Length: 340
Ligand SMILES: NC(=O)c1ccc[n+]([C@@H]2O[C@H](COP(=O)([O-])OP(=O)(O)OC[C@H]3O[C@@H](n4cnc5c(N)ncnc54)[C@H](O)[C@@H]3O)[C@@H](O)[C@H]2O)c1
Ligand SMILES: O=c1ccn([C@@H]2O[C@H](COP(=O)(O)OP(=O)(O)O[C@H]3O[C@H](CO)[C@@H](O)[C@H](O)[C@H]3O)[C@@H](O)[C@H]2O)c(=O)[nH]1
Image (cartoon, rainbow, N blue to C red; front, side, top):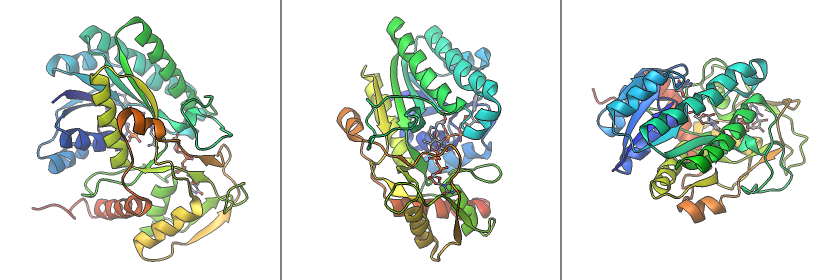
């Protein structure tokens, strides 16, 4: 058993990772400032795992709060999710992204150094590959960035690599492809504020009748059906990858890995799968391409299998089914699974 501090542990991927850590016999402690999470998530995680995890309410930028987290809990390792993640917002306000994502990561690493805690899983992203031209994308592909958000992720990867050359940090950089879906209990899931930018949350709102129709951003890409290809991964598979990553770090094995399924799915295929989950054809229309989108992003997942023994288990239908179940439960105030 290890006790793991999850910065941003109340967020979408962090909350699912709390559950996966518990299932693997570890304990999670959450450090979150709730800037992008509802406080009720902690109680809902507790309903899944038996008791709510301990929470330190504070920012990674607040040295005092981070020190408190290490002082009050005997932490063995850290999974660092806390960050801002909206690409468009990062273009409008890059300094806020540099502050939270880069300065926040440096502050966290300093606190870890002080506490002599060295294993650190870092949430990176497939966008560090910029506009790749060979598929599926291996970890050895050139990196780049097309937004301030992507810049923060590749920069933090590099900062941590250099920090690990000077101190005994053991770093696991996980480059996520497109996380979707929700825990099968429908008690936790993604909770986008306002109109969602991402495909699956948008379709969920169309299915709920809150948005009129899906706009497919371009059908003239050089792909089999002309729409964009992505590597969607169920958030519980992604959460389980974090457990394997942390286990490797606790054994002293650092790594930089893609976390995806390796299966490219088009927007039209996703629309079809989600319509199947809902039980009716969701309204859609094709509109021009969205500026900044790349035609294709899919992982070569071979190295994650080799290094961590990680392989995604849940298919596209499970991703859509769990998302749809979650949005309905959420609309019902999470009473769907409430035994009371
Ligand atoms: N969701 C995706 O599509 C995706 C893809 C690739 C990478 N990532 C990365 O994965 C991580 C988690 O993403 P997510 O989708 O769960 O996002 P999220 O916004 O749901 O979770 C992030 C959590 O961090 C918290 N937070 C933000 N700034 C903080 C700070 N300064 N101190 C303490 N807490 C803070 C927020 O309140 C939130 O609970 C992020 O680093 C994100 O960049 C996400
Ligand atoms: O309303 C919509 C939304 C999306 N799409 C298309 O659906 C695909 C997926 O789009 P989206 O869900 O927005 O994901 P990405 O654009 O791939 O970006 C996500 O995945 C990246 C890689 O992990 C992260 O870095 C980003 O933060 C995250 O938003 C793309 O082809 C889009 O053009 C539509 O056609 N209509």
